[in-house]
Image (cartoon, rainbow, N blue to C red; front, side, top):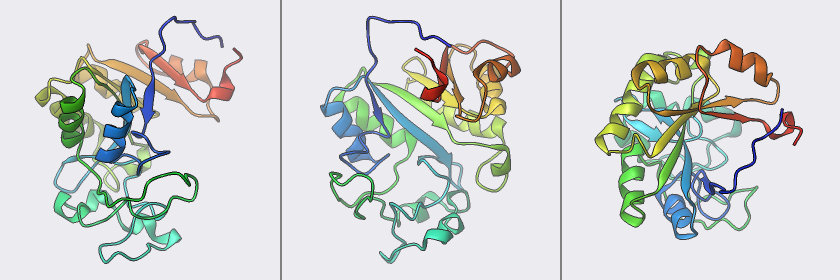
Length: 226
């Protein structure tokens, strides 16, 4: 598959600025804006009290988070700390910034908690009113009722936050999961959608399974030949 060449590059901050600041935290997003990115890339999950939270995993990742007492979370126990079973108040008791990151040695170590999507949008717009958001809805079929609500509710919760913050036009939603992508266009036909394609998937086969043509296709880089 070939890429269309564009003259303007959209510079995105992956999980904010994960190489320099704790990923998917307010300091990371503000640092990315300060460095001049056009778009903030982030991931969202849902809490027990139906708050859209910014987090790459629907649980406390032992690689970056400590428990409520400031102790290490055992590597094989991360999924026990299920965010979908926690209220937002409970989530805020976990620090996910002070622990040294094994893969990002230059990352600054600061106390930081997982922010809500609402908080990220509000704080980011204070620094740059024109900032854009590339939001991945973290979902797969096995998550339903365990790590996430069903797709209809999940998408609805995300869209409500965007609408509340007048961020529908400045955002695109992306996911690997087709049921999420179908639900996005059903609920908000005009929003930009990105189809994510993993390394073990076929770009063409996945496109054909979707009932519409997404505005953006984001495949694993090795699936491209140019």
